[in-house]
Length: 90
Image 1 (cartoon, rainbow, N blue to C red):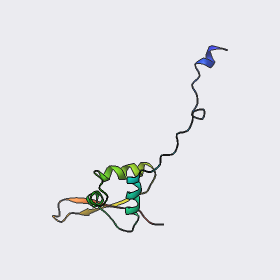
Image 2: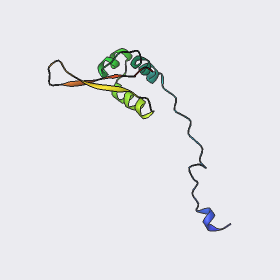
Image 3: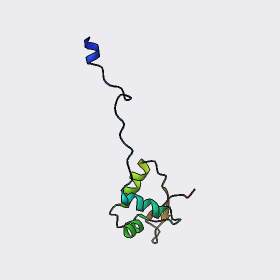
């Protein structure tokens, strides 16, 4: 055995695959809400599903490849704005 073989790093194909990450119950509830045809603000989602930080849950869903749509809406005072979130039904 030569020293070149000892220093060889395993390739990506030699390493075991990580299992696909399953959805948490919270993520499943969020997906179901966003697919129901309505558009919800982060506060609406937090109140309905008892999620402390709905925006981070939406960010995590997007990282997993789930297409969560959003649009900005002006606030009632005209100065502030907020986002509405939903998932398009196919």
